[in-house]
Amino acid sequence: MREETAEQPAPLRSGLTTGSCATATSLAAARLLLSGQISDAVEIVLPKGKQVQMRLEFCRLVDNFAEAGTLKDAGDDPDVTHGALVFARVRLEMAPGVRFVAGAGVGSVTRPGLVLAVGEPAINPVPRRMMTEHLLQLAEELGYSGGFEVTIGVEGGEALALKTMNPRLGILGGLSILGTSGIVRPFSCAAYIASIHQGIDVATTNGYRHIAACTGNASEDTMRRVYNIPDIALIEMGDFVGAVLKHLRKVPVDKLSLCGGFGKISKLAAGHMDLHSRHSSIDLPQLALWAADVGADADLQQRVRDANTSQQALAMCATAGVPLGDEVCRHALAFARSVVPAQVQVEVFAIDRQGGIVGQAGVALSKEHT
Image (tube, rainbow, N blue to C red; front, side, top):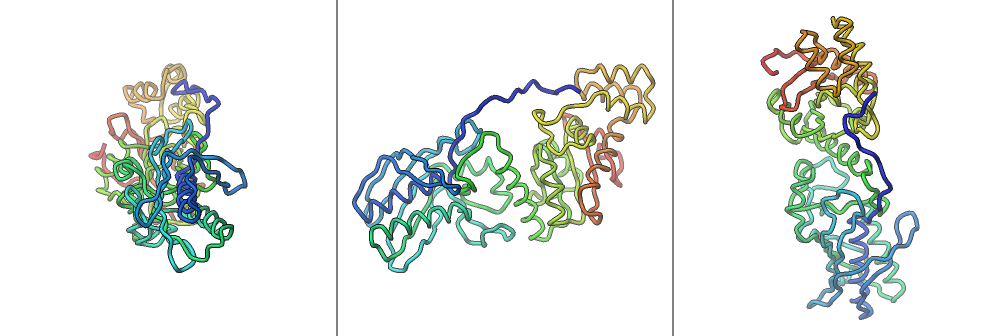
């Protein structure tokens, strides 16, 4: 087996989530209101008990509220919010408890299907719990019996959100405040998988029974061309096809279209559910066997085994009139069907780098779509 790319994992630095940033800044602002203490750093406790100290960019009184801000440090994770200023503005209220408000750069929920109700600020449950626990503990320590209005914002968050799945999920106006552990693991699949699940949940809750799970922009464009499918029903799965297939056990749909580059679909055909080159490889000997099943002679089989990439193998087979793309899609279809519930109709498309369909299975379509 060969890697399509020469990626080698290396030790990477972890960071802290926007939820941790929101907790630190809201705590600092509340402490300033209640005690007059201005902080340049604040210590918080993460959900699993780890204590971390976070540096503040500012902590100040403004009229009848206090505000504090910190720069999001995502470590070595390629997070769109890395380096963004996350800030909290806290006001005291007569009624006890904590009330959350979406500030500039934080989105609001506009569609059902998420864990938050329509109209709520996009501050996820764990960050809400973290902030609530820290603020209530502070109130108890300082003998305060009232409540808090907490507004969370992210500088430039509305523009940053356009680089995320929020608009497709119906979270408009900015980013989500996220995190379950408080820590950003570099290249962790957890957040991405959660967004895949959310995408499926939102699509089904809003009545879409046919979804298309795609590995990237080219495959999304292909599905739009083939089906004119709306964005809400397009699931950006990246390499995490397993996250889609397994979630459909809990949230079944009527029809699932899987679409991706030929190399990634060949990995699915071989039974891989994480298609990233760090976790699965192109199996050229297996491609040669599948080519043999659909008419490749011994010479072509050897050339497939010796190919530099899956695309080269596909091109050689296409020149020889051997439908390797369709055969790979048939095996990918069989594997996908073994994971999802029987009532889900599944189809698979493999595309080239230009978005042209080079293989398909489980599809009642004419070749005019290729």
